[in-house]
Length: 306
Image (cartoon, rainbow, N blue to C red):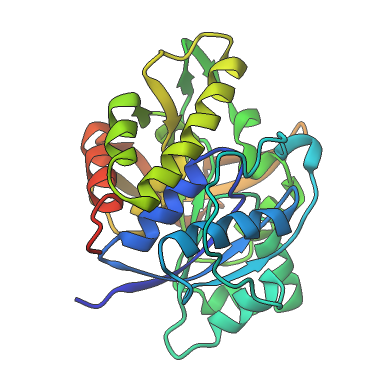
């Protein structure tokens, strides 16, 4: 089976789902993770976290590069890296993330890109080379809101769409740059919780599973504190980013519809909406088999022979 090459652009280190997505991309039999680029907050520290997890997984072949930093007041909580076990580190590339992204796009078979953080690196790549979007087979974005976001008994809107809201200029630039887009929106990803029963199975799997579980332990405390007790006790994370990687790999576990999408700023917030008149055609994930996906994710990440 030919594997699909991807680059994962990530703000790994804050919400643990980025680390869970990295492990999933590493062990998914249909994916070939060729590079990880980091963004936002202290992007160098985020690169070090990715390099440590890759080292624990024995994958020094994956390029790691730090990209755009900033927005610490919005995306840097202070716990980043806590709980991460000592171990070997994969090397960090001396080139910046934009260089790595652009160089990868010139390969004979360029990798698709999966972005699960702010879109700052991709905007910088587009500004450095406006033809970049035409060389990327597909850009899968964890972001967008196409339906009410039902979460903890409350309905949220686009203002909670962190990946687009934190750097709105980058989001507007990238989503209107001409990429072949697949949106995995917040209104869908919020439906996929990781529960304590899954966490213990992850912890018992292998060294990588134990490292991920330790990161989840740290995040779960913060998650429950920030929710002020509204999150069910057995929920330890939400699999926003792993679901995005899954949607980049194919349509299993998700419902995908082709829709004309417009992105525009309203009251300082980038908003995605279906626009039959002026919208650009894009794939939009509109539903998920949440239970099926969580079991699938766990089986892939704990497949130690992968």
